[in-house]
Image 1 (cartoon, rainbow, N blue to C red):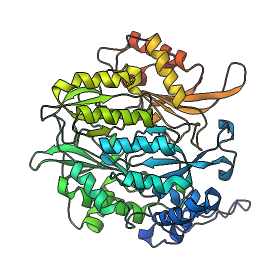
Image 2: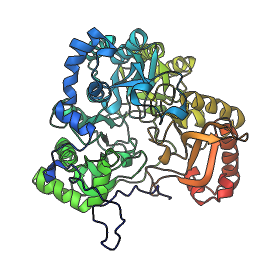
Image 3: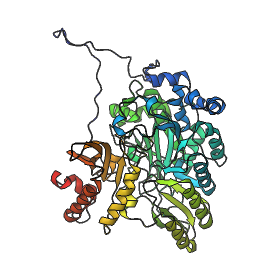
Length: 574
């Protein structure tokens, strides 16, 4: 598969003596790696983190900012440390995408916040979901989005209301601690951990233990940048493990039995890289220690000089998996890891757990699909009521912006399905509703260039109308900017928002197209980009319809869309 070129950073060195007119090369003090003795901050982000730990801002929010209002917030807290408590300022309304890169941060900031609620492993109770819904209604103008990291995001949050929101969420065991920032973000996990009939191993204990030991601890609260974790024992490979900084993937060792295969160094954004296997098998009880070792390497050896190179994926690419494993063993674990096998390619047409599925205890779980993760407080409260009536009081979010009700007795399945469908939450959705994701987009995000949520919803409607018989698995991921929050490079059809020129020569919202990305399969990789292939938002339904019609006409027996898109000609894909 085609790979996105990597950014090559300038190297140290003097200009040749034979070139008297050569520019002066400015040297830097290493890459800011603490493990190499480089503790002096090399940029503003590193300076504000050294000045005061991001976790400390909570006290100021509670005692100063919520009392005195938005204008009282220190800029380093506003655009920095408040992220450690799940808060970003949202985009000021009415600013078009052409100005995103031109305006200063204070010009883009609205006096309202996005707030992210972390839901580790995607596990929720009905009381927690009801509280999420009530916070949405009371403090966030009814907004709520399910993310592709199993979180829930609010918008329109006022700084004055943040302490009351924390109080309501924390009363039911929820948190916004380190939901954003240069710290360990939410630990994603299989939403059906512990109940799936085909599960290799249940990773729930490890997720809980990582949270108990390390989340909110200053041991790892100052990292070079964000750190993403995935832990799943599902053979469906249901947590996009290849694009996390560290991932533990369920496997069976021929001698030691069920455990986890260790991956490191995955990530997307503008320099995407797939994670690599270290070839190590990790038993469940050692996962938290190994996790701490990997994140410790990132803290100590991660590149802090440039934000564009501050993710673990760049260190892994430079070191290679052999050196990374050796340092993990020698300096952090003080022991050898056991060699082990990699995961098997998943079976099944979908891996999102949508539909009705039998659990290993004889009950059922029921997964359903909102449109591109867009929900609201009232709807979530209604879902909580349905889950309480029909299940055991447990639900789960997924990495595909979906929800699942767990532990439903067989005789209650039909009633639950009917209740969900009445709320337009489809248990048997079309391919297009099931497979389309969208990031926040220009509606609220300061980095976005184009609108995404509404565009995704209208695209679903159009494709359902135009191609009602299309039933092949398909992912359409829509992103408002190049940062790939919606995983555009790994989708069958990835749409990266940008301004494009329409037929009248006008600059309008549109997308660069990525085709044939895939995760979880032998040919996992990033989608190909066809030179000059861009579509306007208005042209999008026509383009996707044309593309899928050609795929249906030309596909070989059993050929997935991603496989076809890699071998198809540029003319077929245009």
